[in-house]
Length: 122
Figure 1 (cartoon, rainbow, N blue to C red):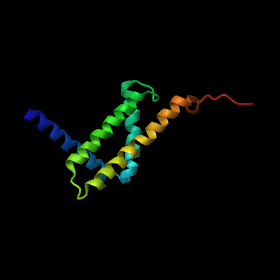
Figure 2 (figure 1 turned 90 degrees about the vertical axis):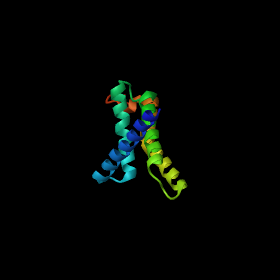
Figure 3 (figure 1 turned 90 degrees about the horizontal axis):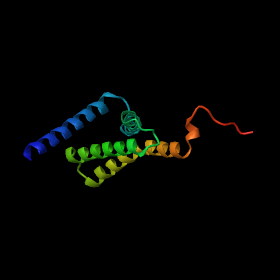
């Protein structure tokens, strides 16, 4: 059991270090990076799972990823005020899933908005 816990801690540390590297190597603001990564991850999960963007599965995988990310942040980072840290984490979750969630719903409700062929109204 101790070895499993050590592997989990190591994975969390590596995840946080990799994320920190990306955040500091690009000149994109932290909040905008969450929006961009959310869209790219959602598209990637759809491609990997071979599901349409209207499917809930790529979105659920995105939610799992962002929850993992925020759990790592809570575990690794120690803020002086827990309320501020939880608020920042909640904001990160919302920013990451907002656009994919909106697009998934729109694609499901109005697929014609996302096709090249539209019917012309007379």
